[in-house]
Length: 126
Image (cartoon, rainbow, N blue to C red; front, side):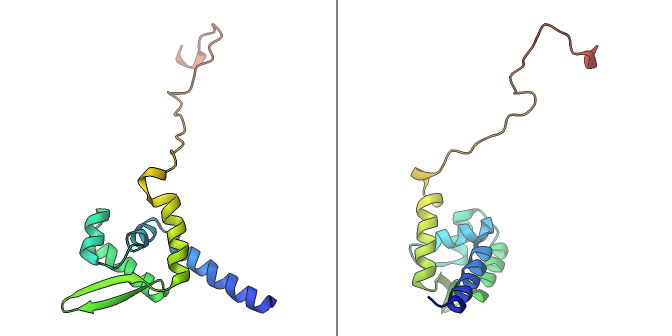
């Protein structure tokens, strides 16, 4: 493959990944993986204000990730292309489905950390 074409493809892929590297935008595209939806349906499904969803959809549209379809007063959004859909389907299968969600690792707080007492009193509390 031509290095110039590879560089251009890498640049396009990096732009796409940067755009999807936002939790709200990623959740929105996961909602669109199975077909088009309106702002209200996305907002309700995610528990996010419609204005927030609209702002993020506007950015996704500018980046060529989603496309709008107007029907009377409603605007429905869908994923634009097969390469975007394929990437989002992989992400969806790995991160958006409830059956396959990885268990979150939680750090212990200092209070929860196991104490390694040696019989000595802590001088700070004396």
